[in-house]
Image (cartoon, rainbow, N blue to C red; front, side, top):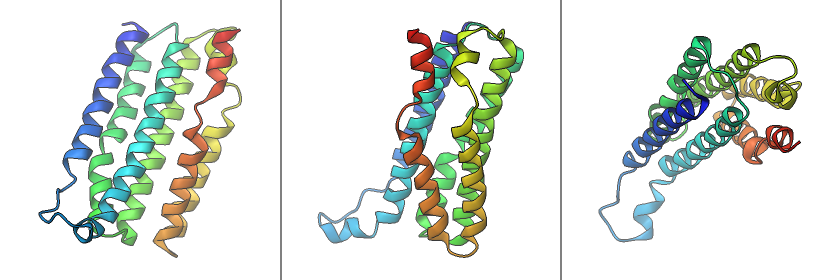
Length: 191
């Protein structure tokens, strides 16, 4: 299998996940702004999840663009990532429908940390499939952003037991850190 084929498959799965999320948004039966006001928790979780899925899609694209070799371990690691991303519609909907209740925010965080760990594992498996002088190995580097994100997710899950809004704020902080595309791979490919 080529990296392009793996990327196309992953793009399709992520597109389906986003489609499922948007289909979960209920259309108000009243044509007033008051009708929309009651939907803000569901819409807020949709936006947060859409941004997170967009970040994964963008960085996954860059990661596979620098990939020269695909093996069975890469395929399974990629499926592992897609599994956790496929849970976003469920955890987003649950959190929004229940107005950011503590356990819903915890489960959302568990899904975020597991997706982050799965992405990190995918990078490790890809690095193992490439030689030490490959563009991918040079581009990935120390993986600081990945590690700090996992740490922030873990702290956010813990602090959600103090106040769920702290967890939500920290989940948003990680998304903001990753909103700027990962330039490491673009710069390495451009060399």
